[in-house]
Picture (cartoon, rainbow, N blue to C red):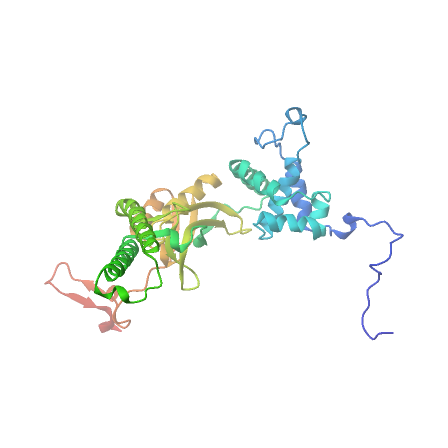
Length: 353
């Protein structure tokens, strides 16, 4: 007796009892729903690559797109977005073993499937929404709207603003001048001083700096036109992140139904502020739900009179927190009522308290 709770099997011995993955997956495990949903889809109708067996007979057989879709959706629901990490799950995860029959596609196959069928994924999400609606999981009465900053692939060094470009151009111009000064010292009275760099190296440094200034100059034209540009992700912008820092991000707008917290509509914008997004998201949610009227909830970041008015015209009731007014909290602007009929003065409601 070791005094500890011990396992029931010896992992170094063969088991006489056949192992069954289905017994390891509980009846209420979400992967069972995921399997049933994907198996119900017509992959050929959704235009998934390799969905037609007749055109997939020559050469090496491909993976069934249903199996790769199951794996992709499993990663989506479990926050596993990397194709390399999904490939690793195929080697060790019992739920994945059960879901795709112990297939082990490599990360390139998973990545290519995602890239080749990116537009078809939208149709899959629509099919899922229809299924949820048929199961009465969507309330269709109230939606909550909010935004979140999603970090882009674009790094800070490949994001440019006018101020940032001016600083970089000035830096390289100063470097050129420093190298020119070194060349002057080489040719002047101070030529006996030891300089640990050859003339050829200096000329190369000057050429590199001039080339960089030329590249930044071409970028500057785009910056002056658009205000800010990102090289890797053109739509990404420098935004404040949730951790009170900043990053190159996308502002993802999401509308969620209140009954089962299901996503109804989403949009991606490069505007860091949420203020102008209320009517867009509310109207899109109403159209997706196919209802005559809707109530939309949002925080004070969405407060915009013009957008609220637009929602009212679309028969959408908005409940939005009003922004706090600056100044003395004891005497806010809303406490003063202007006397239109009398002389030019306002009445403060605190007088009557």
